[in-house]
Length: 293
Image 1 (tube, helix red, strand yellow):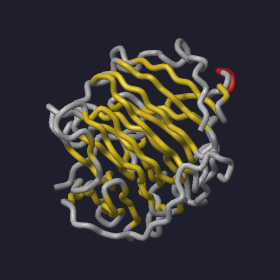
Image 2 (image 1 turned 45 degrees about the horizontal axis):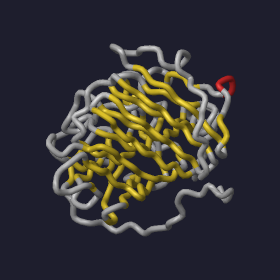
Image 3 (image 1 turned 180 degrees about the vertical axis):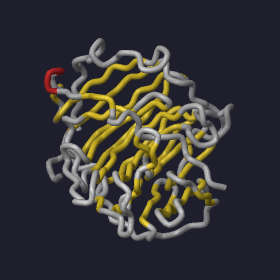
């Protein structure tokens, strides 16, 4: 994808502090052309919070990002249960911290989960840093599908969205970037320190969203996450929507130092949501999360 080196900053409109001195600037491009500020709608994710620290329990337009069709192969990995996370978490040490995390995935088709009457029902796919063994902060970006009521309708304008969040600050969504089931997203989160990072989200529809954030809550940079989440809305855990399986591909994290320069999926802890979702390693760069009924 051709990227434009100059882009309009939204600083001043979108860089107001949320907690402490947390600030950010962002730009949007479509097919390599900067989207004017007047056409960019970035807003706090309603009703204010999407992602959370893990809850414990003991198009053919030339922008194609991924096309691989895989059959599930379950490998032996350490597993653990969670109320809201389903996916892989790879952990490193504070001496050899995570600098960058990357992943590509296809936004799923979401439907009402049979027998569940709680609304909204939702499923969020994302990659991120921390939030597992380090619970003070989490930096994440991804997509979410949301079903508000029993009609089961999921429309792109209000129910399929791309978002990012630096927990404990609230999430942000870009309503002008269309998200449809089957779209591919390529996401990179690159930290420049424990409190500053760059996020780049590229979609198969030719959109590129870039955010630079600084003075966020301090990351330990010890957890690399590829997750499908049963998200919170505010303080309430949403009903978990039924979704087509999500494959994370080209999944890796690079490290700041040490004898090993990268982390893959091999040997990662696999979080499961009992009765809701199971995840498994396919190989060192691919994993899947799938509905369990």
